[in-house]
Image (cartoon, rainbow, N blue to C red; front, side):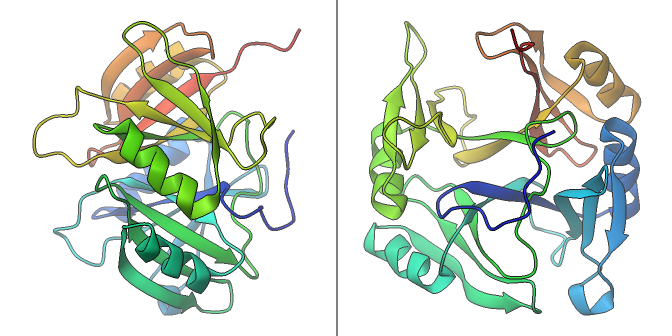
Length: 259
């Protein structure tokens, strides 16, 4: 079971969270789907809830501060210094939508907008390192940017975190993984997506692990979500794309069994 208790290296997608209008409804959905347990951080933290699996933190869910905000899973990248990353976001041509600020004594964060218009978070860990469980059913496995402009996205994130890219493209499919190590296994991916509806911004998609994609996809519908992409096989495992009850998209993936 991959468990982490130390800070994630800078540039690693290390945390995801969700702001919702119906907090109790979201907790019922994700608790039912993944078996998550929740701990309310209290009024001082805006009733942000830490979701855990097997005693290890996996994600955050909190009430939306503005009912007009879209309901999306936000990907956070680990940072040694949120302030330094904020400066690099601007130097690389992006925007800092929310300037760095302290989150009590647990960390420091910002929200950025890249040069293709996708929002992302940056997390400088203090008491909270980010995901403590990963690459397991019900935990974070992968984060990928869906963009109409692959080249611009790679240029931005290459400048921001010093990523190298491994092109995995094939006919009709443009995809690259990114890493901070030339021979790394990949920290996430960037996909050219020409099917993004007009008016919908480019976005980061969160993938959670599944012990059985077909069963979990069916359960999504039973719990009040919807299926955007039915289960299908891929070189990376069996997968589907679904939404939660407030329309937030995420992926489910069942990794191939180790040989």
